[in-house]
Image (tube, rainbow, N blue to C red):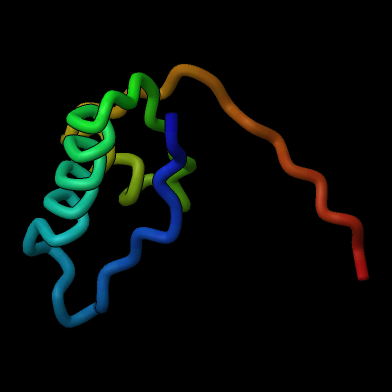
Length: 69
């Protein structure tokens, strides 16, 4: 199993399918190597839409607590 994290696209390259292509490639590589589970946390609704287009689905939510400085 693996977590996909830190996917970001340079503003100049957005809306060209770069994030979707990278996400699909990395996920395919995981499953080709015998992986059975991939997960990620979308940073916002736009990122979530990209991930859903390549096959990810919302199955749960996660809450984080960050102690104030």
